[in-house]
Amino acid sequence: MTIDWQRVHEQFPINRRLTWLNNCGISAMPGPVLARLQAHLQAMAEGGVTGVPSEVAVHDSARARLSRLIGADQDELTLIHHTAEGLTFISHGLDLAPGDRLVLMEHEYPSNVYPWQHWQDRGVQLVFAPLADTPEQFLAGLRPLLQPPTRVVSLSAVHWCTGLPLPLVEIGKLCAERDVLLVVDGAQGVGLVDIDVRAAGIGAMAFSAWKWLLGPIGLGAMYLRRDLIDRLRFPFKGTGSVIDDHNHLPYRDALKPGADRYVLSTPNYNDWVHFDASLEYLEGLGFAAVRGRIRTLAARLSDLLRAAGWSLASDAFPAQANGIVAAARQGLDAPKLVTRLQQHGVVGAARLGRLRLSPHVYISEEQLDRAASLIVAQAA
Ligand SMILES: Cc1ncc(COP(=O)(O)O)c(C=O)c1O
Image (cartoon, rainbow, N blue to C red; front, side, top):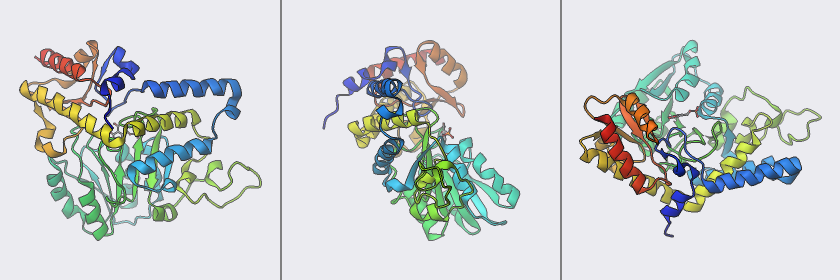
């Protein structure tokens, strides 16, 4: 199927005002998603929850779409609020002992650091694998850390500052050989790079909806491999955790068998509808086509900046370059440049001294060309 990317561009209201190049921060809403949400809210206003699909139906629909995307079973997925929440559920459910080691990554986003820190109070060592320039270098730095007493490794699929994609399949193999649990922060990965949880031997993953998945702010998802759902301690119990939860009395103890036990009580249902609509939209385009389009746009932007003398973090890993363009030049004041660009309607971010730009499918070639000229002029 050929996709009319110009039509996609026209479907996004944000393009009327801005050139939004911060999709790995917070992305923009597609017009068809806006239309579905408007219709949903109208139906809610007129008929309350009787006029709209049930919570369970919407949850199942979104989980089914996510399961196809990451190669999990639907029951191994649940909607949550954000990455930090998912990693908190996972971290507090583990059974580690004093002397065990937990491996994270240097300069990791806090949502994949803070939820693990409580283990330090219980004698577990937190170690940070060095941030590398290439996936191979990262693997070489990680390998020695995977020896006993390491029990858990929790890593981002893609680094939020440089766009470095981690070689998850290779990491998963090393972890499986050493009986180490691989946990993934998928916030920058899901939707941007191809992640198959089985192929990569991922035990658990949490991610946010509002980045590459074009979903609502404050919603996310968590994947727990079947055996982990039963193995993780579940020190929480809410109305929604037990089977047949819509019948409130008599109280009961039997937990839902799937990951949906983590929806502790009444969910933010409208956001579920929003997320389901975003996933439907992306599925309609095809996730492979989406990833390809993002890469094509990012490559164009990278070429333009490189031609103007900028260096790119992805120059160290050209074969795996993705949608995060982390660019620098001599003397760059990245925060100042971001402010100036925004004054001209171009939205990016500053990370680790670089200008970070992340186009999504709806950005046009013309927008990129104009943005690149503006960047070069404003950084001078
Ligand atoms: C690697 C990574 N993890 C997580 C997040 C978001 O965290 P949360 O979903 O807890 O808000 C981000 C946001 O930039 C991120 O880059």
